[in-house]
Image (tube, rainbow, N blue to C red; front, side, top):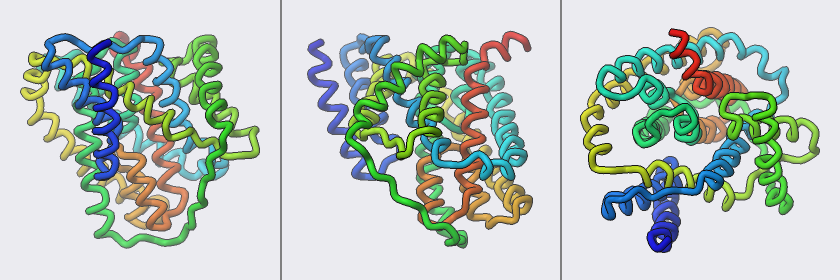
Length: 335
């Protein structure tokens, strides 16, 4: 308890500083650094209540479902086939790369989850449920997220933005403080009842989509709630750090960076193919197939006036990746 008196405010301060500096996943990284520093200096893991972590996973599930709420199903139809092919391509690369990493001393689940390009905020939660190494998955995912997010604005700035779509603004409501926790508390048992993979994440996602289809207003989670969920994920990832774990990660760092570079090049190539297929600009094709950094890609898409292709293809890929991650242990057992 005494360590939390230091870690909690330090996590908030670091997260705020990183967010001001526009660092990707700022609140997660801030908590990860604070908790990891505490665990390493004291030589003892910093544990988070399982109940608290379950609620945090649910809040992440609500956030992950929000892009699905605002898009009519008919707008997704033209993008289903190219979206599925692009998702299969990314998943295939992650699967092969993860199996190769397994030869270097990590489990197959850890290797594949660490290389899946999408859902970086959700992957540590899924990793814990499927028995993968949460620390390695988190470090690798956020390294990829950082590299992709930093290069996206640079590459997109070299491309011609279409400027064909004007985004609409969202307005928060005070009752979201009640609605979002309700979606978590209702969605998680429903997910278990339906036997969804990773019910604590997918249950709230399903509840959010269902709620968004019937309510006459936008679902906007209060920022403090989402920050708390992000910080909890950071504590889980950083609190379990140890010197042996960091040494193991550093040994795999060259291979991880090489894979990230290869993945970014492959996704850019698939973005060019998708742009030709759908008759859209390469700007949209590139943003639609980026290996993660969804928030950055969507922000650049809105700023550049891109059409529905970017968000549609990103959502299709995210859904495929999350479903694949949830069933990964069964897939590996069958193989």
